[in-house]
Length: 291
Image (cartoon, rainbow, N blue to C red; front, side, top):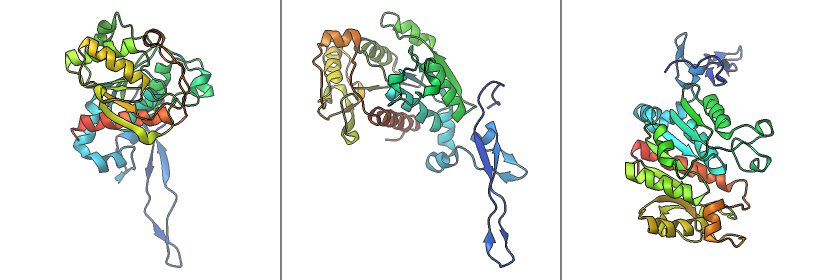
């Protein structure tokens, strides 16, 4: 993997452990590790015969060299970079997925700060896709990250998704039912593995999150609409992440309005990010062929 071009953030580091020396008293005395700023921290290059600590050391212990190579080759699209999608994208980047496609049309707003991994006072007003790309490259400067600042149009979805190129996995983290349905149909028609996030609004207990088929979901207003519409369209077996917790408070909203506008609901700081992390865990395990 070639070094990044000038202008790409390269704040990853590696730590070289020096040989410990004994003090006059005979006790072992460890010197402070020397931190070397380098894009190669992700790759684990040698320097002066010393093997440096790298960003993938802990990953390698879990997935092995072959697993790291498989993840580095994988190309995953995260559609929607809100509370769920931004945390999922971050976890995928940290988890070794080497090629990411990040799509969102929005810019970072003050109301995003309570739950979105990319939302800071310093990123307000910036396109979410570009902010997330910068974060992913700061984690792994050698990654191939495509940012798409666009709205996933239900009437042009096939053309838009086709323009993204070959994908090994798709994560649906968008709110609006019409786009979710079109995306699910597109993935099923082409045999592209997909995971779809259901609603995390007005939920408090992360222990109630579940992976299931859409037909098995309960206590989720978004999933209720999706179940009905999937039946109408012949979309079967859609894999989703949902919460079976009863919503703590819910404004009455018609299915038609939800289809048209999407939800505008309360969210806790921790629930959407946990959902994003869980989605990333499932994607990575699937890419590795693990149950």
